[in-house]
Amino acid sequence: MLSPWKVAKPLPATVVMLPVFFGYMNFPENATLEDKIKLSRKGTLIRLNDINFYVNTFAIVPSSKRAIDELILVMNTFPKLKIEIQGHICCMPKDARNLSLDRARQVKRILVSEEISERRIQVKGFGVSKPKFPIPEKSEFEAARNRRVEIMILEK
Image 1 (cartoon, rainbow, N blue to C red):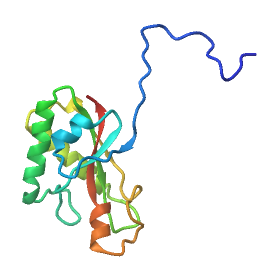
Image 2: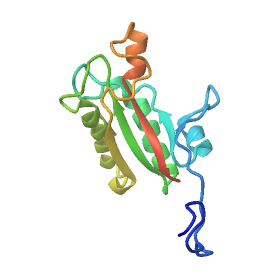
Image 3: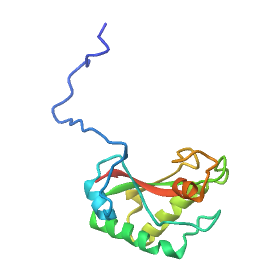
Image 4: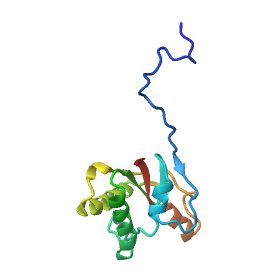
């Protein structure tokens, strides 16, 4: 019987095992999205600040245009970049209507409408399953931190 700590047969020399980082990185305070992408690795999560939606909808508010434009610019600057857009919501015990997924899909729709290949973009809705603060939130600050759009780097 083989020991559970030994590989049954050696890996071919062409296989390269790279570590994958899953989580948040501490970026410089004034880092742009482009700076964050340059510093990131596969698995890095980046919060997209200033992408906001009308209450209980997936309609993006006009003040989010600058953040969306920055994401489009980054996707064009890094043509090999593949991302997963992750939607999160706040203030309710569960995401019965899949609002978090609809919001992530809406961001993807905008990118695709700007000629970013949909093969480079995956979406996922987490509802309230990954809050930054416990639900129910104690303040608007906590609710705003839970209600967010993030991207995870899948490939650079």
